[in-house]
Length: 114
Image (cartoon, rainbow, N blue to C red):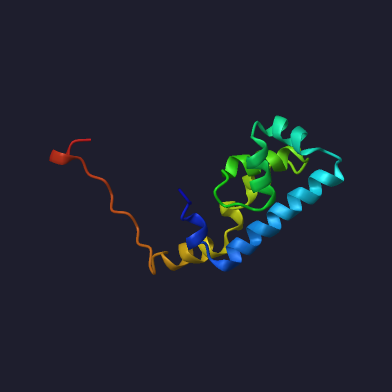
């Protein structure tokens, strides 16, 4: 059964995955690593690796992350969506700030006892 993922992917996302696959293929060859070596280090089949080099969207993100690590890129996914650098998210937070801040009411115990 064919996956529907590729049918719903926007064209720019599809193109970026194809480029990403080509880039990891180039990185592998620059390091003189064979497909068999990559498959062994990632724990994936040869067909999965070939799909990764084509930028297949149905390959798990974990496999791509492991490939980046094996190729010496560290853990780039760890900081990719870091909330400290999420400008859109920060702007949305600012929009939800209250217009005015009032003093909190003093707390009183029921029955007037403290």
